[in-house]
Length: 277
Image 1 (cartoon, helix red, strand yellow):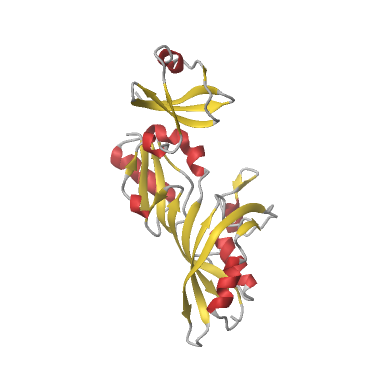
Image 2 (cartoon, rainbow, N blue to C red):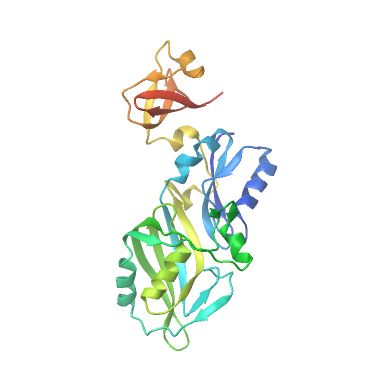
């Protein structure tokens, strides 16, 4: 089996748990993912199977869409609902218009400081491992981009003050929604944390693709195609570079209108990447 299996990851399950279960169920060793999804989060998790694992870099580069719930008035050490409360703050009496205006202020390129509870490695150790030891180190800010952000719903507490904000965000890879929630809360004049998170899209894969196994050919359906000439197949199979006028990037390779694999073009040179046996 070669392709991308689209999973709707349930809450409380790690991305590695999903990989382990798929390896066991299908008896396949080559299984990977395109980026972890936190245990408390749900939603689209593309799982790479077989030769598709060779496309991990290509697939990890994709934009993403999330639906998040921001809880105002409390800050947690993990930035999400699994952490301990480390700060509380009074919530201003906000209007939906004020919230919408604040959300829109984040559209565009923004700078984020990665949270301590993240999988970024520093000197061979993941940040969340250091955080669990009670350590905090300086992190360099990263540039990410928010393409769109939309207020979906608000919820009021018993004092009739808005304390939960549900929003949808389209963003670049590497965006930390926990950090975005904290930054939004700060801009609203309080503190907050990410109470819920659901990923609704990774690149072209959406919730509508759940339980679907997408073939290698379909994954690259929007990329260029190259049809091998009569004497080029053996060259390609043996790793010989083929000259082409195609733009740099991955390409679908065909022989007699039959899809046989994926190649990569660099500086007009086509080299094999994945050949379907």
